[in-house]
Length: 158
Image (cartoon, rainbow, N blue to C red; front, side, top):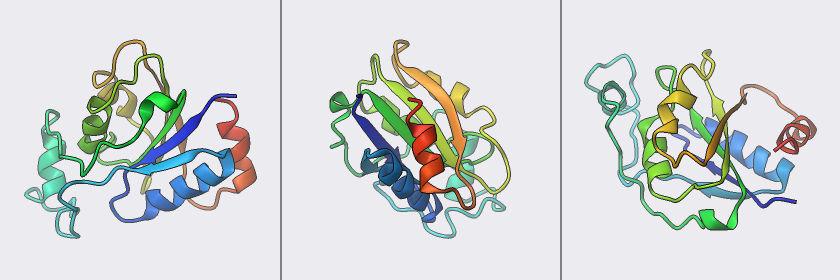
């Protein structure tokens, strides 16, 4: 049996709830990716071209700092990596997280929450942030009511 970690970034709490349920269902450890500078409501206003999230997402090289890098990635085989979908991709803080650790030989399974879109180009946008030997897999959009049993069945595939 492989050792699993659920790592997630949640701007508003929605992804956090999904991550906690996934960790419980899969028996995985959990790790929150926390920005060094927390996002405010104004920062997340996607209708404002000058909001922090809008500025970051227009710049693919943006790498918002994370508060700590204490996740023991070397202890895990499979990492479920969760985030809200922003502009059809992962927020660039997810690239920061991936570039902060060695994921060589690891399986990274994405999960996301979204107001209506799918993964879009999230996988492509993250591949360059890890060693080529890491496998990034498009996983599941976790919106709405998903049962713990359904999540367990899905997570056990990895």
